[in-house]
Amino acid sequence: MKAIIASLALAASNVLAAPLEKRAVTDAQILNYALTLEHLEATFYAEGLKNFTEKQFEEAGFTEPLFYKNLREVARDEATHVSFLTSAIKAAGFTPVAACTYNFGKLTPKTFIQTASILEGVGVSAYLGAAASIANKEYLTAAGSILTVESRHNAFIRNALPQSPFPQPFDVPLDFDEVYSLAAPFIVACPSSNPALPVKAFPALTVETKSMPVPQGSTVQYEVAAGTKLPSGPLYVAFPLVTGPVFEPAQVDGDCIKAKVPSGANGPAGESYAILTTSNSSVTDDNTVAGPAVVQIYAPYLI
Image 1 (cartoon, rainbow, N blue to C red):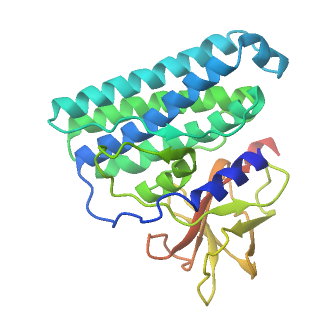
Image 2: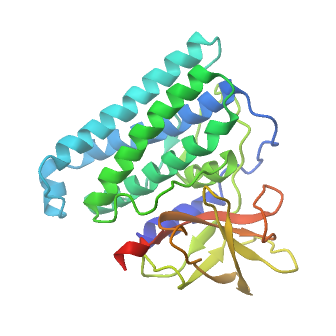
């Protein structure tokens, strides 16, 4: 798991050399943003099921009854989401984005499921974070119906690893750039005809702590992407939550960052996201230095 997250973060620093300027987001752009993520997920599952057989998953330890059948259902759902969003965007009179070229790395059946867990978690956070920006109520309902299915996918995958399928009482919303920073490492290139999206990737933040999940209150070590200029003054590691981000002071030693995981019954748990920032009161594009990094944290009730 650590190797997967580290490789993704490293790749993120090489994506989008000329980030697009942030601007107001329209419903059409939000739908294409969602379609961009669904294309990625649909391609990921299609390639995985093409590369690995049911027997190979069983040999990797995924032996629960109906596991492979349910995995195929997840793949079908993602392909259906692509078709649905493509049709909705065309019906609204806009041009839908086409699938990009992706690189998911050299995966085994186990690392495929571990990567699926990351993608499903990011998908849940993406829809949840975008919801407040959707103006059209019909689009909002459609996005909500996809969100609930993505959340069930996430629970199914996490349970298979095995990890807590519902590690906290609230899922974590992420904004457009935070989500894109997590998705960008998988994207090699997109068709030039695709409509531009108002998103950018932040510099990568890599988790260097070897053993995950980690308990709340433990210290996690991170590394910023090579060439990232750290601002002078105090830095903090923020963990977004639905009730607002929680912060811990960062200890900086060159490119190495250390910070504790916040504690609390409703604190970060499960697939969580660490963001290096100059603020200890809010997280914005302007004060984000690097990240998010994916941090797997024990659910408090399991400790």
